Figure 1 (cartoon, rainbow, N blue to C red):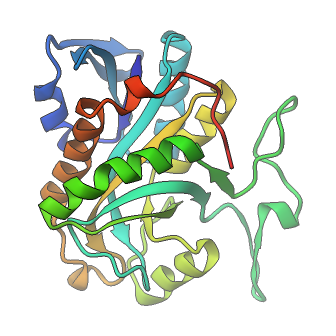
Figure 2: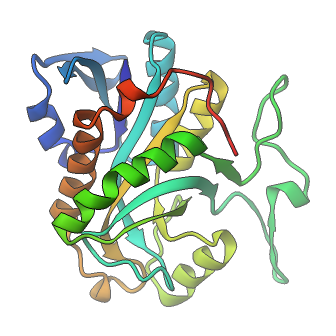
Length: 255
């Protein structure tokens, strides 16, 4: 079973239309849909925006659907400085990063590992700012998407995605996020979803369509619909191409 998580309905309209039969249900406070694609049982959950919503929705879904073999986070993201990304490009995240978790001093930003302060509860290995995603799943998805992205005229890259509570609306905040994380793009949910997948030991694939540039809003050049379509269509390409059926459901490898 595939579990797909997205923040808002605009990010999944094409996916909902592609699942058949598709039934609507509530998962606690969260809207969800249950359908099939290429013989794959698929659960789609809308978490709402932000890390608290994303973590709660992911935890609830993984608890409610213990037969989940793979998780996928679909959505849009803002391109950070030096990424060379543009609206409509596609990012396969290899690592998530809590960009604003730590201590902000006048001298420097102190990340969690330097404090040291772990986000994991007792009984789990420490979790700091960086959460690597499943290496094998990300690599195979990237290779499978390369010819499709070339046909679409979209630039495909893999790398770090930074999760923020506040979007970067100035040159300085945008550059600060990039320098702290070395990320290609920023979003508002990914690290929280990755965090929960570590607890439940489920591999996560994160696909982000670039919707805008970070920095001053008058220069962000939003293409939200294009970004959402890019991420959803990429996911459907992977499902139709057999990625999730070719892979054996094994515990994630965080290489």
